[in-house]
Amino acid sequence: MSEAEVIKRSKVAVTRASLIKDLNKIGLAKGMTVIVHSSLSKVGWVCGGPVALISALQTVLTPSGTLVMPAHSADVSDPADWENPPVPSAWMHDIYREMPAFDPLRTPTCGMGRVAEAFRSFPDVRRSNHPIYSFAAWGAHRDELTRRHPLDSGLGKDSPLGKIYQLGGYVLLIGVGYGNNTSMHLGEYLSGMLEMVDRSSPVRINGRRQWVTYQDGDYHEEIFDQIGKAFEASNPGRDVLRMRHVGDADALFLSQKAIVDFTANYIRGTNQ
Image 1 (cartoon, rainbow, N blue to C red):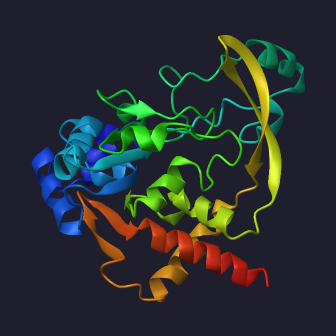
Image 2 (cartoon, rainbow, N blue to C red; image 1 turned 180 degrees about the vertical axis):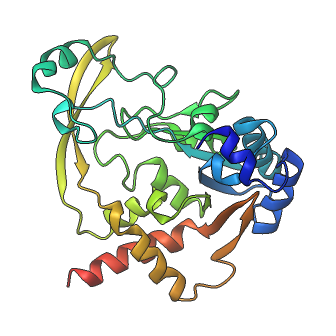
């Protein structure tokens, strides 16, 4: 969506101050650990763009809290797996030979949106070292969440998602739906029903670029909206799920453990 289109459909200018009010109203508070997924264009015309939203989140959480965003880079992967779009097979050799290794400081996010891309380079933000499933974090649990991100099962129980789960963290969806809720992949993993596949990416090992192969889940986020609707229909309670607006965007604030456990149980139930 162009900036002109965003301005046309925005009733008022969204500011850092108004965002702080909206975040407080939805339940975000000092000291919380939260993973945020967002669409800035849905928020409306934001004075200061992604910087204003990130600053508002940090202000509400304070340094005693922890702000996490996905910093995924699915394009740092085997081109044979690319489908949207695929590349000609004649290009494969050059891609394997020339693709830069994943670098947490330099590799841009892919398909994560303007807010997540801006956040990864903010002061005092650290990014985990997974070639396709990295996460960026700021605040009290930053180092705990981003260190030792295993290559295998990069969205599993030992990933940053699993650590947020152990900390009793939250998910905040701003202008996006359950299909963007990465934490539900942890539910797939914990269901015990997830099929595993091989993936490969270029990484640096002892200073040398190498292609490595690792185990990953065959994830199915296309079912997440269905699971999310079932979760809401289960009447989880206001302490587990809150719905309001952040700027002009529909927003969901929910317990990560609640949606992860519900996802795992839902998938087990449909596979019995």
